[in-house]
Image 1 (cartoon, rainbow, N blue to C red):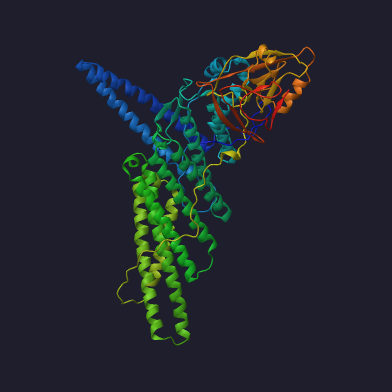
Image 2 (cartoon, rainbow, N blue to C red):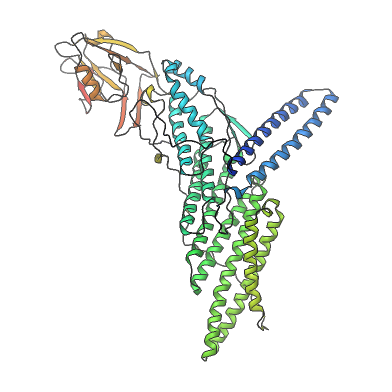
Length: 625
């Protein structure tokens, strides 16, 4: 994956003041919930360490008494673990904390809690790598290291709004630069990244930076679910914001599933992410249904049938989510309250599809009954009237059956029973269908009951999976003072900085320059510069002590032309590679794409006695001085 990031050429880094985390001491309901989650995660971690030690002792000892004591201790630890996991599951099922504070009655959405992480001190590893690899005084980069650590600390408690999302994406983009600067392909810094599973609280630890990036991306998706759940869906604008949030949550989880593999925690495994994507899509479809019912004011036959088809579509997608939650790798992982909620919604919206179909048929027969009393109607119309009335009553009967099933499943889950708003919604729609059925049942009806068919599902808006757009948050590389990534990265190797003193002769300094940031020595004149120690393929990093790693071609040329008669002192480096070749490295900068390519091989001579690398003729950005 290649990220195109806009680079600011100011060497100093000033973090945006607006991108700050929430106050960890604030006493909001959400912060209290996160604090309880963090406390339980730490207790689970402690119990798991005790269990691992007890299991090792049980396998190692041969003393029967010790084995009995350890077995008893293991039983006690396992009991504690089970209680802690049940307490954490109840916290993860606290959907009401993330719901809207509006007085409107809506079916609650399922949000996702953020993954918790331990503090990581990168000061010593980064300083050691700067000294060893970049040959720089690491004390000069204490400010940059501190700013990165503060950014990670703020990222742990993002606010539940766009600012919190920008904070997470900013840190994710900075991890791209950190990876390029400090993580070579076959070596790690020895830093361990600890993250807790978002649902079970089981800790996971890896030294790979990809685990840190994946966990941050997971939290981006989780934060979108919380933003979507808190929207006021009593108005079209709030519904549209919820749809956008859930679609972006689905995109984040889908991106994680496609780009990160071998995740150590279950919440980032392929089956779990697939389930989360489908859950988000189902919640998008539910929002679409709410918008259709909100904007459909008339009771026309076709309008009510469209609402019925939308409800059937929501029921279908929730049924698919329930099937995914029933898979072997996910069944024992997903909280029981989640599976119960999904099943309740599948039954609830299937009941609504039959109800709206019955409303469409019954209202049509009521209009015909009014016309029948005022005018004479034909026999075929009377037969059609009777059939529609019987069919509408059959749909109401099926709606009641589904409503009762939804209420039965709801009653089986202790956590759902505590959600008053869900109980209120289920009771209201059940009573509405029952009143409609009783109204029709009061009329004499000696005909046989009809069998209502299933409603064909159809939607006016198919959900989109919106992938994350990391370029929306422009970042500046915190460690950019180390130099351009095209040369100064963890994957490159170069020799120590050499000082070369050049004297201006009759033909000038006698060197050919090419490229920007840093400028490349493409050719040298034999005798003068070569004897002074300058070599073709060197990069100029300073002119007379002035850092020019980020300098443009014209700026270096101006510095060279401004030198006095005593000459100019260049600080240069030479890249080292296995086969004396440095393959091209493309770096997207603020304005242009700079591609640097140095090839090894023979040296050719041109007119003017100037030696150069085999680039052909002097090209753009290449000049001889």
